[in-house]
Image 1: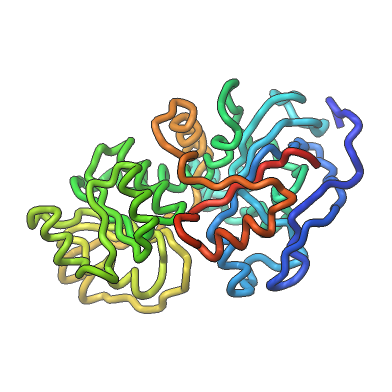
Image 2: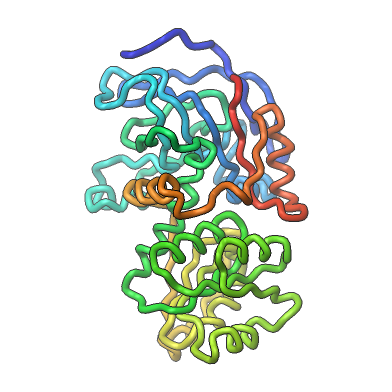
Length: 351
């Protein structure tokens, strides 16, 4: 290992030892392989998919495990085969570890790598003092960028990816269903990169207030108002060109499909529950498109970090920050979604 310095043998971590349990304990500091760097974690966001893992005892993330895939930090050691990265450099990482040589990787769709791994799923993640990261996953953080914000490049990149997947669609009005972290990231990505009208729907008024503050032209609580009637009034009868379902339940899939105009598109990114209903008549007879979106490519990550660096998006004012020592509370507060609590970020002040 080149560029190494003496590292502690153990580190503090938010550990997932078994289903329905989290604890702060000490775990071994990982050793980086030849093509990896050892990153001293500065900050790591908690993702909604991790909350669902905990809630549903999902087999996609099996304990014992250190979760966490929205992270950035300082390189403190590099493997023997790593080039162009040196100790002391700040970097963010993609959540996806691509193989680099399958058909998807060759054409740049690294998020669809046939043998991909995900931090905090197939290997330990960054709810800890240190994490080992393949160098090909890294993107340099410009000096002066707040690392608490830089760590959210990954969820913002999910929104950037949505924008790129819908470049072929002419759009004026977009409905985002769900004002959670991914919904708000999608809202800001479309506002910034497509300059369109964003309407946000959610059953929590506190979250709708945040969406409004971030630039939504209108917000709708479907528990209090009929969604389609409100959309007709807001758009003056023009309708919705694209619906982004950032929840992903059978109910929101259905409502999203019926909210979009004929010839429009429904974009699915939320993974709350695996819906098994396909409304084929509603899709075919109205010539609607249904598009899935998964994670983000390395290019999406670079674009997202640039939006944060240039302060074209707000990934700070609506986020709650916790020390790693308070990681269990950070996880539970976000899971319970009390009041306006939308996003938790762990800040690793010490290891």
